[in-house]
Length: 232
Image (cartoon, rainbow, N blue to C red):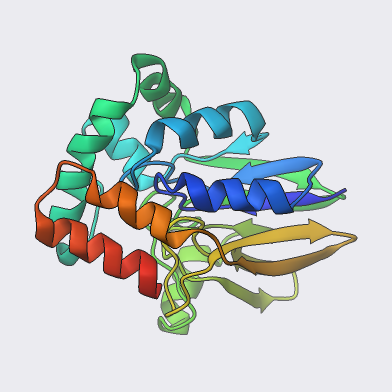
């Protein structure tokens, strides 16, 4: 079985379309954050509704659907709030209801393996923040209770780490706004018992044009443009 694993699309339809064009899959998993930042939240939601088999609620999806706190770090609060206004104007009542229906966690089985799907972490499914660079004690505290495989997103940084003999944690990175100074769209393919980290170039300048057309202050547009161009 070939499984496509995505996270943190954030309204970036050109990146998502490039993956869909280049890859095939038997099963699709999306680990949350379909919306905010990017210009095409409606198209992203429609694509995921039609194609994904398992979808998890992200902190931005939660915040938009329920009006709650997105839990963003201070430097992203203004970016989120301004892009949110443009996002809300693009999505339908049905699309917002779809986001509200998503679970915070799913436990599934793939090829006989126990797989846990969250956006942030096992301890804090929406807001847990785990990267390769945080203290090991934090990673254990956020993930250590699980057994099997944990697939998660949120940090926009790809990660593969074996915590113990019966626990591996994996982040595919971000489809829409990857970090790590690499602007290529990031995702994972699982096939024949192995997880393969993938990176693809796509039409970043199309996203730049879409961001420039959004009704936001120039400083917010420029911050998002720098992020998508530079992968940071």
